[in-house]
Each structure stands twice: as structure tokens, then as C-alpha cells.
Length: 270
Image (tube, rainbow, N blue to C red; front, side, top):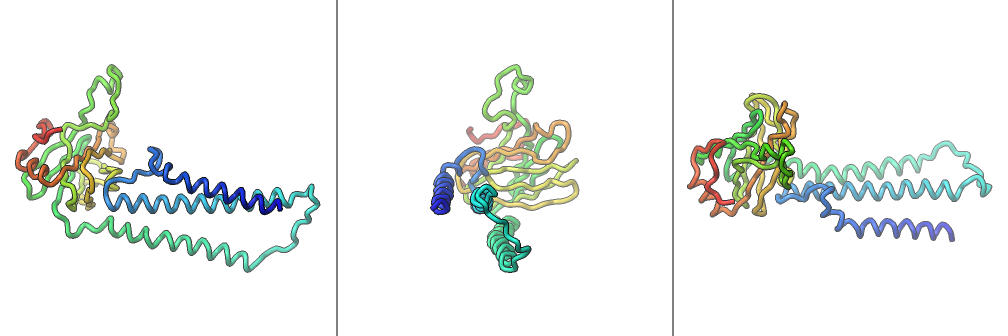
């Protein structure tokens, strides 16, 4: 009877964790779901792995604590005298093997998709500098620098820091919604890393090399990131800001902007 009650408690605890998963998913401390198909796939894989770990932890620690409690010496339980069990060893080898294969197949599919830059609609070259970014719309005649725009008074703790402290730039990277954009990423000096979590894009910018990445944004909005590779004194002052707009608005941006530099403001309205 005691064993049945214990099992019921474990099942109730497990169901409570599963019921909380939807609320947990939207909390700021969880992995971002993002606004691209790839970011949704990555988030889904993350949550599957997380709940598998939770289930394994519940089972392993549940069995362990039950064994400690139900087979304690004060109850007069005698320890088993066997030294091995081929059946048990086969089971605890086979089950992890199946779990790992089950995770590896969809993960491999997602990784292949992340590296597939074919059939793109447009190309943008991204060059990292200490400590700003340069964007060039290949074949569009638009290029500009993008530098930190957080007021120096906030950095020096004279004014209060706003919500996007150190995540503001003078010129945002404008992208069209629903178009596959290929990025050619390199550096002019040291190694940087162009990272925007909502797009599930993080790619090193290496001097003398060109790395490729891509995105297709599903929702208009402003998405922020940072340089994710320690690159010197002002590494923390090297944000990335992407503005995704409808295609018609993007065409207006291209028509209104040519050969921008880092001091030129966008014609695109905030």
C-alpha cells in the first residue's frame, strides 16, 4: 500500500511539472522562441531535451529515494548478494541509446537546415570592426556603419539606464519579412561574433574568412543582439539591432537610402 501511494505521489508531481510547462515556456529565463522557423525548431528541441531530463531525473531520484526509504536497515531488510545483472545492464544501455538517437535525428535535420544558404532572395555582407558593424546590401547599392547609440551619460551613470541600455544603434539593419536573407560575415581586425537570439543566428566574424548564415523573419519588429566574442576593450559596446519590416516598406527604405555611413540617419521612420 505504501508503495502504491508513493507511485501516485510521483505521478502527481510529474503531471504538475508538465502542466507548468506552458507557463514556463514564456518566462524570460527560458530560451527565446524567436521569430524564424529555425528558432522555433531550436526552441522545440530545447524543450524536448529539457523535459526528457526532468522525466529521467524524476525516475532516477524517485527510485533511489524509494529504495533508501523502503529498504532501510531499521526495517530489517537484508541486502541483495548478486554482483551483476545482464538484463539490467542491457536495459540501461538500450534506453539511453534510443533516447540519444531520438534526439540526434531532429537535431541533425535542424543543423543541416541552419547551414543551407541556398535559394536566398538577397545577400548582406556583415563586417565586424572594433567596435561597430558595417552592413552592405549586395546588389542594392546601400551600405552603412552601425555603432552604439546609448548616451554617454547613461554609461557614466549620470542618467538612468533605459530598457535597451547598450542595445541601441544609430543605424539599424533593415530586413524584409518573409524573405530568405543570406549573410556573408567577416571581420576587418579581430574575431567578432554576430548574434541575434530571436533569429537563431550566431556566426563568428573571422579576419580573412567569410562565414555564411541566413534567416527568414516571420514577424515585423525590432530584434536585438550583441557581439558574442570577446574582441577588446569595448566588446560590450557592440550591439546588433535588426528591424524587420513588410516588403513594401523595405522597398521604400532601399529607394530612400544609398551609401550611408555611420553618422547618417535612416529615412525609415522609427
